[in-house]
Length: 139
Image (cartoon, rainbow, N blue to C red):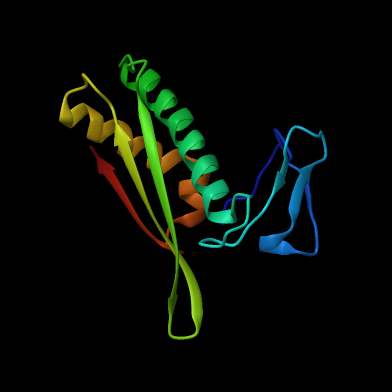
């Protein structure tokens, strides 16, 4: 396992004892949200949605690095639709995910290169590699 040599940023949050039905707040106050279990009638978001948002944002950043390295200009309407499933297998709770990548105007072979490079470098992709089922789809 590769270890961090220099910390660039630390996200700090406090989540109440309600967990999935509680609240979470960041140390800087920029994040202050209610949480709800998936499928419940609660007003808040859930960990799967937060993970999907963080991963897709990180993946777009990694695609920017890949594009720079390949000399490719990314379109302004580049988007990643992340889907994170919470499920069970027997008595175990598990996650699986799909990143549906939209790169309008970029040739399919180049788009595939960009997504493969991003998936190889994105910290979220690295964290999930070998741990959950992940599909990267060009759409």
